[in-house]
Length: 482
Image (cartoon, rainbow, N blue to C red; front, side):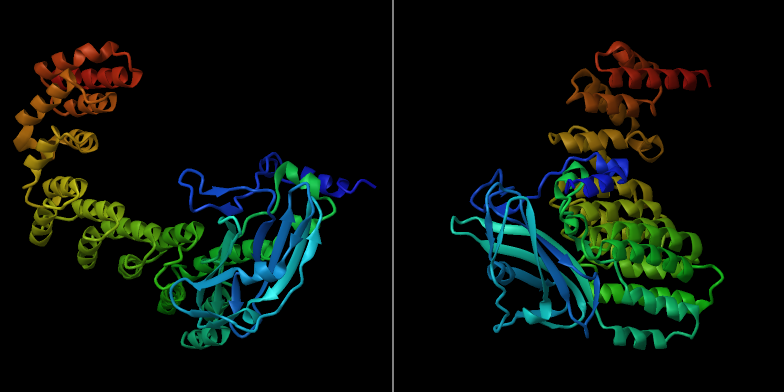
């Protein structure tokens, strides 16, 4: 019987999006001496896959991990399991501590023929001394004789203490909420990540005699756990729950933060999005504020960004100091978001003085953002700086300033200067993008002079510019009729 026939049948039943994909082996070697191609795929070396058996281990139980070596070369390879296992790196992501064990097992080397798979399952406790619950990252890095590093995609998982979870659950009132809380933490996929498929798409056909190539140990369980968490979060955020339900949710989030040392390991986006939707739809504003004030202090950029937006929509006064802190922080993207979010607040003296200080920031983008926001919730002292940036020698800064003055209500004192600067941009545009934005902003300042300045661009060679000119001319003519 053709050994590829069973796998071909499997492939035929795969979803079209998966079955039609071409498989490209992952990078399995890193060359620190190279700048352009630091990582590469070298088929003369085996492809190593790190496959934890669980995404949430109980600290009292074995920590089984399967290592898979795949030979995609045309020659026989020797799989030195002792060297491969000895090149594993286990590290805590945040809390926890790991020390390599000295007296380690000595697995034997095995020959591996072309287009074949070899596997060995180990207990990480026999290779590492692990102290404390938390998120752990398993990777592989083996220096080769030629100076390159043999690598594999890392995997991340949680080591939890089920006995400690039961103690946490015991502090909640008996009932479905307590049961849901315990079940979720004992089967926690939120912080798990990594693990690449060994094959997919049409490449599956080549591995008919090796069903191990088609699966990883945690595949089905991980998907089931993620669904369980979706349902669990929905139960813990039901509007009909007593106050104990909200306390269970807060304790659950606190445990996730503790395990990951404040989300130094990013939680899954699906979890964050689902939690965010349920919290905003189902919890009262005070409970929302309390939760987002906790999350905005985390280390995850995605979580912090989402929390900034929610606190902004709540106009949380308790969040203002957190927004100041993030605005002064090292992450410029989050700093921009934090400063920008202040525009949703009512004019406030503390915010106004903070924004004046930020206008002196070494980063010109942050300085401009502060100037813009001052025109919405501060003392409007940054208006002149916004207008000045319309002539900046920094194209990005110039574009942002030009785009911002489309809001005539907040820049009325500078109207004449703004119109002149925009018309000057039309005469000598920095780029088509600047030209299009300048035309759009002029829509807010209808006059015969502006109409005459924009009209020549109705037939501009760039269709986006021409379309914007038509829209602006139409709006100015409509304003004149009013």
